Image (cartoon, rainbow, N blue to C red; front, side):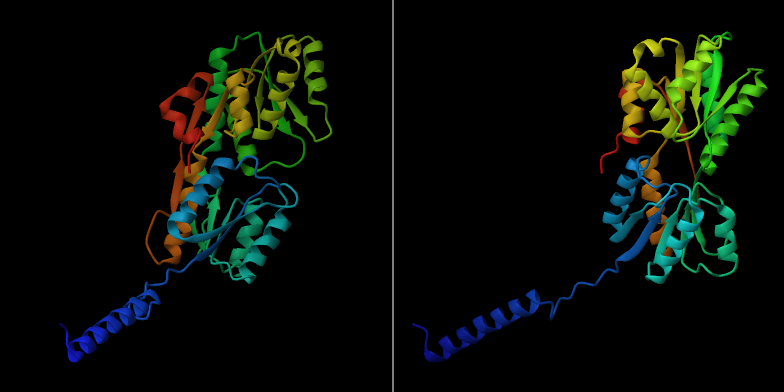
Length: 325
């Protein structure tokens, strides 16, 4: 039998265990260190995220791993430099820790940085602009990509087939300009004639292409400047198979799901793609490492790959084209 003194000691012991448990569960004794959540904004050059699907997956993956709050921001109108500058300044005023930007106008951005209007750390996509507040850049050599696409097309297209380049009528991003320049440089260097068709939002692309073929160019091969034009042209082929019999090939750049679907169905011959998932992932990593005072890569040049239908099932490209978060 336990005496009164023993019962009292047992009670005090149990009471002490309860108190210790409560103190631990309420962080009074063991307090986990608080991890700062960095606020990061990604501001692109487009009004939609249609071409940023894999990029956003990579961005979100890095945000989870690094405990960052990342917001993806589109413009009200595509390639509107003033809107983009307004958004950058807004994020700065709202206390955002860092911004990741695909610049519409490099000169406007450079001027704002030089005049100290922008003091927030920045990671740039598709630009090698160097300034104090530029903490990292991620680029793709779009000129060489355009040359590679033209080389692949020339290797598969007979001389008698007419080459048609589809270009934007009004606004061009830096990537689009460089990509088209690479295409035309390769074609001119090989002595291959080409025709450029400038497309606006209200143009009937099907009628324009039909007019080219009716003028005597019965068979054509098409190279597109942007992912949007590649998708739009492929959609024409999907709707009218008879019209498509006169098109010997359709080439472009991009790896959005609609492009990959049209490639798989045979309406796109080949596309140049980059690892957009890694671009999104590394851009957030660059921002967080800078905010934590850690050294890291400040410049990253991404590879590009020419993809055809049979490549869609290859393990080599599976992770790049169809990343899983």
